[in-house]
Image 1: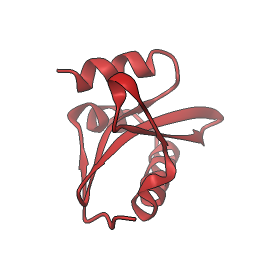
Image 2 (image 1 turned 180 degrees about the vertical axis):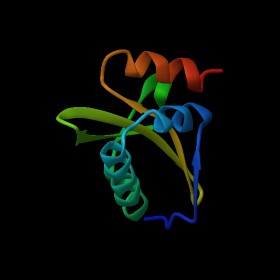
Image 3 (image 1 turned 90 degrees about the vertical axis):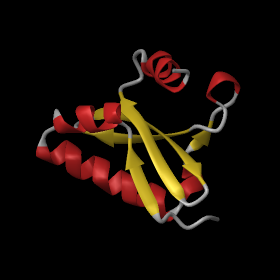
Image 4 (image 1 turned 30 degrees about the vertical axis):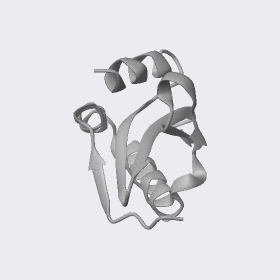
Length: 96
């Protein structure tokens, strides 16, 4: 298991985080801490999204998916959101 030394947010992630309320931001931050402690906790994707992991958690009575990738000792946070169009938007962002 790798130890995370840096956490980098994508511009999309930062924009979406600004729109959340205080409770949702707390849930998101708690989830990021869990991922930083155990980076292999998310589901590893294959195909177009190979190397990307997705972690599912609940916030404000809804299921939220968080996409991230670990490169060396850095945790890259790509995006988060509900399941609707999540993977399509993630593919579009990663394949730029």
